[in-house]
Structures are given as C-alpha cells and as structure tokens.
View 1 (cartoon, rainbow, N blue to C red):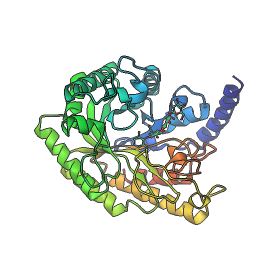
View 2 (view 1 turned 90 degrees about the vertical axis):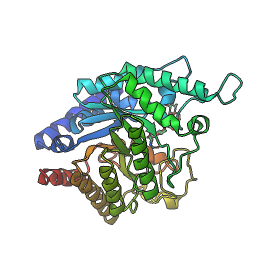
View 3 (view 1 turned 180 degrees about the vertical axis):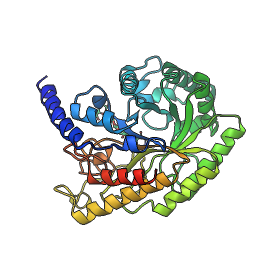
View 4 (view 1 turned 45 degrees about the vertical axis):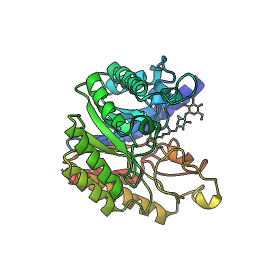
Length: 370
Ligand code: G3I
C-alpha cells in the first residue's frame, strides 16, 4: 500500500510536468500513418507502477502482452487455461482506447511439453497434435473474438538461412502446421487479422522464405494480413539498406508489414538474433555502460533510432504498426539477454521513467512527414 501511494504521488508530479510542457506523443503524431505500440508486462497492466501505467496509456496507441498470451502461460496444461493476465490486458486496452494485438498462438518456445507428448512422454501422432493446436487456438482466439485486432498466429518458424526450424511442430506435422494454425485462427475469429512473425527478417534468405510462405498460404486459400518483423536490432546490424530491402520485398509480396518488437541494443553482442534459449556468460567487457553511456555512443544510438524510424515512416503505406518491445531501460528483456545481468539502454524511456531526447526528434520527423 505504501509503495502504491509513493508511486502515485510520483506519477502526479511527473504528469503535471509533462502536461505543463504540452508535449506531443508518438502515438498522436503517427496517427494516420501507423499505430505506435508498446509491449507491456502484467505488472504494468495492473498498475503496480503508476508512472509506468501512465506512460503506456499516454504515449502509445496500441499494446501487446510481452508474455501473458504465450502458449505456456495461457495454457499450462491440456485441460487448464490461465486467463487472468490476458483478460486484464484486453480490458486495459479497451479502457484506454488502445488497439490490442495478440502474441502469440504457435511458437516453438514457451509452450508446455504436454502439447507434444503422450502419457508416456512419447511424441503424439500428427492427428493428436493437430487437434491440440485446434483446441488451443479456438479457445484463445475465441475468448477474445472481436476484441483483439489481430494475432501473431505463428512465431519464428524459420531459421535465418530460410529453412524450416526443426521444432516439435515441424517434426510431428511438417510444414503444414503453419497452414493449420492460420486455418484454425480464421475459423475462431473470421474478422481478426492474422500475422506471421519472426526475427532477423532483414536477412535475405529468411525474408525470401517468408515471402514464399505468404504466397503458399494464400494459394491454399488462407488469410494472412501481415508479416511481423520483430526488429530486435544492434548498433551496426541490420543495416538501413538491409532493412529497407526487406520492407521492399514484403511490400512487393502484397502484405502489410508490422514492426512488432522493435528495440536497439546499445551493448556489444556475441551474436545476432532473438532465439531466447541462447545464453552467454557474463564479462565486464560485454557490459561496458554500467555507470553511464558515453555521449558519442548515445548520439550514435539516437541516430540509428531516428534513421530506422524515418524508414518506417517512408514505408508507412505498408507499415501498419510499429511496436517497441518494452517501456523503460529498467524493464527491457535485453538486460538479461543474451547475457544475464547487464545494463542495456534500448528503450524510449530511461531508468527514471524519463523520455529520452530522441523521442522529440522522432516526433519532429513524424510531423514533418505529414
Ligand atoms: O512468469 C515467470 C514467473 O512466474 C517466474 O517466477 C519467473 C522466474 O524466472 O519467470 C517468469 O517468466 C519469465 C517471463 O519472461 C516473464 O517475466 C521467463 O522466465 C522469461 O524467460 C520470459 O522472458 C520472455 C521471453 O520472450 C520468453 O518468453 C521475455 O520477457 C520476452 O521479452 C521475450 O519476448 C520474445 C518474444 O515473445 C518473441 N520474440 C523474441 C522476444 C525476445 O526473446
């Protein structure tokens, strides 16, 4: 209770200063171009930090659950669903007039082993897995029918070289698991938009595989509205050119594009990608900005954010939403990935919940683009 009161007072002080300055928000200035969204965690939705909740509702036109709709948390056992956090997320979005999207229905990660195993721990047959997928998707999409704008139906089905990831879904059902997922999602809510989502979409072979998938799914009569490019970026990769090339390819394929999990890590990286099972051990060398980010590095990060944002604006005829994967430098997943316990600075708000100066530059850029 004490904590609540303190953070509530702090939020009021913060709000008064922001309102007094009459600052515009990215959610406002990108209206008519694309939705500007944020991934939120369950603590933020229930308002444990009043400041964070205020930032989310003030600055963004869309939200997505960072974790609460994933298969494992929402469907931990075959006959048990846990709707608590996801229900709150959807109600929060409705209350604050923010578009809610769903992440994610079918993913090789964060899914209970029960999905693939029989009572003896052996792989289930293709028929059983297909039926379990059907039940999962019908229940989740059906529950939020008409309230969730669109779903990341399948997440991360490809390797960077464009081959299918050898997931349990793939091992048991082959590539058809993707088609089934899109069919089941459409059946459960014919009006919801349906997306394929992946990281490193800027890698040509992966982008080509996704474009081929879009064509194949459409050829089979499936609905697919957009490709989600997660856009987990580093200081030097992907290049602006590679990012633009991927946007061009997706545009030519006739799908909308969503930038679904945007962040730019300021830290050195031992590898590229967002495969959550990857982990490296800690070393001070890989965590160089524990005290502060040097100005020259900060300027470089600012420029990269602005350049990428400018590109998204340039392609706003096909880019329907840009979502930042987290709110503040305190809460970003990148503090623990791919090395645990580092201090990263990839978000638009700092560790004191203050807007970073780059936001003003982004707002100017969006306004100039009108
Ligand atoms: O909820 C449990 C909690 O009950 C438990 O006590 C605690 C102890 O570790 O773990 C909590 O779960 C963690 C969860 O985040 C919620 O905080 C998981 O361990 C942790 O692995 C999980 O990490 C998430 C990760 O996906 C795996 O689901 C990150 O927050 C989330 O940012 C990240 O997001 C993914 C996208 O979904 C897909 N694209 C890549 C992106 C980054 O990996």
